[in-house]
Image (cartoon, rainbow, N blue to C red; front, side):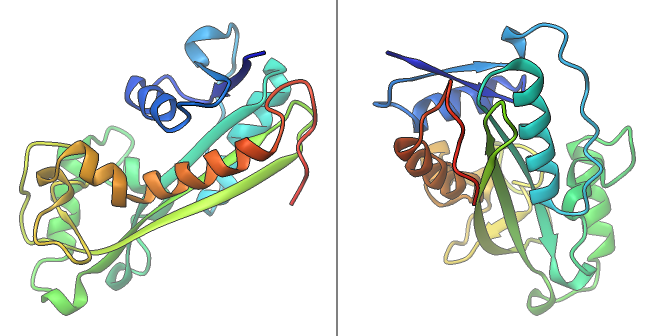
Length: 207
């Protein structure tokens, strides 16, 4: 029997990534494109965990499918943890990658490498239709470069240099980035969790 796992996203890249990470398990990944009348969920939490958990729980309870949701972003020490949960809209509600990166570079102007320490964080939450939920977290330490480099990736990837590397995320291959990234680490933990629990029709064990 193949169980269905609903990804609380319409992002094609996230769907493909999750399918790859769950290869070999008897799990069919579906997305919000496959369900009808799913209301928009406001991400108003103060932490990545709060946002991911809210999305997973409300989506699972509304659709009847076990649901996986994530929230992730960039945390810069010298900026007091900014942009954090506001990473996607750092430059305002009409923000895009270019505007967000420009704002980050402006705020760090004049900061030396010692003050450019940062990390990407990803929290993945898995909820059953009864609202029982588990979460896992992945982190990738690094620093913010002085200018954008590379054509790959998205978001802050052209500015983020992971620890132990001289290239930005945007300069690494997709395979190498996924191997070391915050999201890749969180997905590996999620796979381990899904190997141990039923994916549909049964409640999860609450942590």
